[in-house]
Amino acid sequence: MDVNTKQLLREILNELKQIDYIRPEDIPGIDLYMDQITTFMDSQLAASKRHENDKILTKTMINNYAKNDLLPPPNRKKYSKEHVLTLIFIYYFKTILSISDIQGILNPITDKYFGGRDAGYSLEDIYKEVFGLEHQETRSIMKDLARKFGTAMETFPDASEEDADLLRTFSFICMLSYDVYVKKTIIEKLIDHTQEKKNSTAGKSQS
Image (cartoon, rainbow, N blue to C red; front, side, top):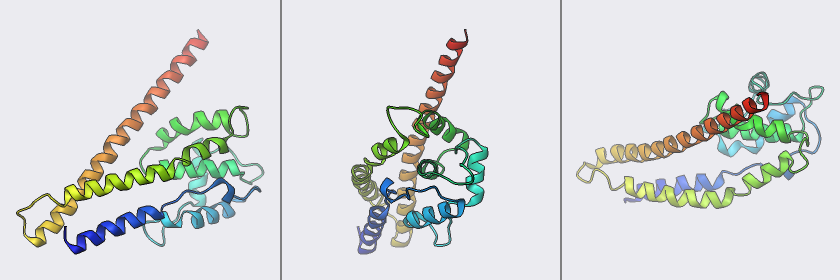
């Protein structure tokens, strides 16, 4: 592994370290208007932008989420802390899943826990539990990423220096893409299973 390649790996791992989640205590405890929501999300998740001018969340996005029953309606055009938590979940899901699949994941959660509808857990409790695993998972991902990178850098050993850089980068991208593909497939199967179980339960209750 040459000096430039090692530097690239360090840069990738450093970028991964900078990815963080929004802590519940950082979310304002008062209801927010839509402009305040978009500004808050943009500032809190700036490190996850691919390009500087990218928008984390827009008014159009929020309206579309509401139209697709992903986001419960605001109260007098104001959004609660639970709305923000729901939007954060949507933000991470939408990079790999369709709107219908996000509905399959989120709707059972918001239907039961949004607005304190269930005495067992609040939406904030669920958010804290899930994202509390973030640091542990990041360490595991970094180790796996370094292993995949090292494997990719050993491919095409007979290629010229110019070709090797292109081909090994392609190998690394393919390895990561396959990893995403497998995990996305598992997620979709879990969603389908949950929906089938829901439909089966609904059918029994009607019979």
